[in-house]
Length: 605
Image (tube, rainbow, N blue to C red; front, side, top):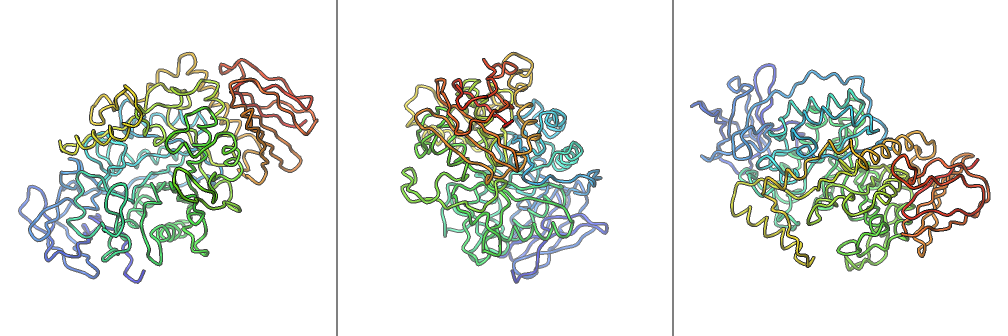
């Protein structure tokens, strides 16, 4: 960019006072009004739509609004909204006594990610509750937690994707200091923090950004309305806004990675796409601090350009969520092939996902009604994040059913094995490790009655084609939220305790196995039998051969191997230790009978 680099926005406290930086390109006058005081701080107009001021008047704890040509609004780059999205902004000191200087972020290929929602993860619904569970996550085998969005959203309960103050840490979760404490505590447990950020839209309530400037453009449409303005007139301020936000999470909160929501909805025809600028901003911070940071995108385009380096005009993201692995896995496990699942055909597609990450690599998609996807050849396995469930795939079901409500315990263990034994980066969704019985439903806490009714109506419309007597839960109801809060006492009982023991052992297996630790899909050969619903995974590394057999059918299946060597059993989903009916014996011939919904791995002797 040819414009001056903007590192900081909003009100930043400094040793000699506070500095204010605001983008309002159409304003004629701008003042900062401190709540409860008559004094107004006059901002001076600068270049490219910016207004600046340095002052000794504003102090930490002061609440304020900006007054643009006589109208007062909260700061779009507010760092704290203690009274919610409609209240004033508050000056905060983002300095923190960090103790994580010796923490080293793992290589991306070593990540074991655990996605969680702060509000429903624990009964306290806040960062402190998550801090209290860090020893548990460490024992489970997790070394990275992915936190769903925490930018200030309306009310006290929301998935986080309705945020309207991207710089302000949600007040009901504990605010900015509490999030800093969580990051510092996580690092003390050798756990990285991946933060979900939303740069593709603002929520529908409390969005005051358009009063300041053209944050949106009518050039493009998105599922949420007008697109964020990354390439239209005055887009420089919007781009600066996003880049300053990226830098803030790394600098002020020591976040290790960003997961960028729905990157395919970032509409930008600039010579340098906003993702490329985010990559450059991140690279500059990495170089300056000599620390590792990662950028992971959610993207459903199967477009390798998102992962290609800047030198090839790619967006140079470090990793990508792979929904198609999930879709193929769910259908292979017996899930209904409806909606977007209709494009997936079970075993054959899952076999392809194991080998190529993408299922659609250029062939025709009936669901999308077009030829779709690109080849992933040459992209390392660590560039792809896979899962058997996540917040979207659970919460976007009408009743928010988890896998525990849809599949048998045997099948849940097999699905988990498919994810953990894949040549990709695995991710769990909170509670899946003990087969949690609580749903994860869609919930909001708006204050505008018309908006509340519109959300209710939209949710009902979304599921009217399901032709079911069940009704979609009311997103606004307190009970819809509280029903989703994890019940941690379940871990101590029966099948839940067995499933937790299974996940702990499975993650330890992943970490201790020299082949799986490579996260290298070039080591893998995949065979499948569609009629039997069986996949055979053969990993070869140096002089080692490891064979996995995954039976997704409802019947026992006889597997014939080309190799007649003897094999020692090293993993078995049917082990009685976690509720299975096995175990399967070691393999000393070319044939083996695998029980239904069972996965087993053998190491060649």
